[in-house]
Image 1 (tube, protein in one colour):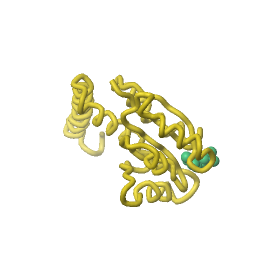
Image 2 (cartoon, rainbow, N blue to C red):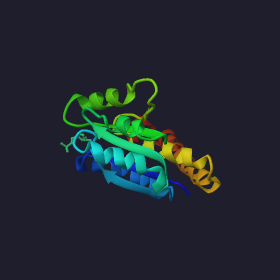
Image 3 (spheres, protein in one colour):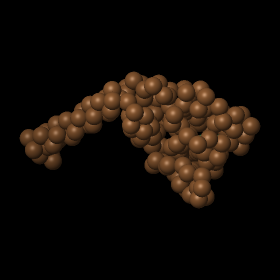
Image 4 (cartoon, rainbow, N blue to C red):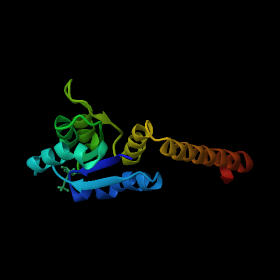
Length: 166
Ligand code: RP5
C-alpha cells in the first residue's frame, strides 16, 4: 500500500497537523511526516518533494501558515497529488495562507482544504489511496457510518429533550 507524505513548514504547525496524522492512524493508512520550509529551507523542500515517489509516497499533504508557499513549491517538484492545508498563523485568521494555497498559477495544481483542515486533508488523501485499495475503502465507509450514527444520536436526543434541555 502506498503511503501519505506529510510535510509542514514549522514545528508550530504540529498541533493542527496532528489532526491529519490521527485520522490516518485511525484509517490504518501509512504515512511519513517531516518539517521543511519553502522559504527557510528551499533546497531541502525540493529534495523532499523530488524523492517522495521513490520513498513510496502516493499522495502529499502539505501544511503551512502565513505566506504559505510550501504546498505550491512541493507541487512544482513532483507529479504526485498535493493537498494543501492553510494554517492559521498570527494574522488574518489564516486567510493569508488560504489564498496563497488556493490561488496557484495554472499548470501547478494544489487541492486546498479549509483553514486548519488537516483532518479533511487526511480523509481526502485516504480516498485517493482507496481508489486502489478495497480494505481502505471499507474503513472509510465505516468511518462515514460512525459519523452518520453520531448525527442520528444527536437528533434523537434533540427530539427527546427539546432545545431547552438538550
Ligand atoms: C510558516 O510560517 C509555517 O508553516 C508556520 O505556520 C508559520 C510560522 O512559522 P514559525 O515562525 O512558527 O516557525 O512557514
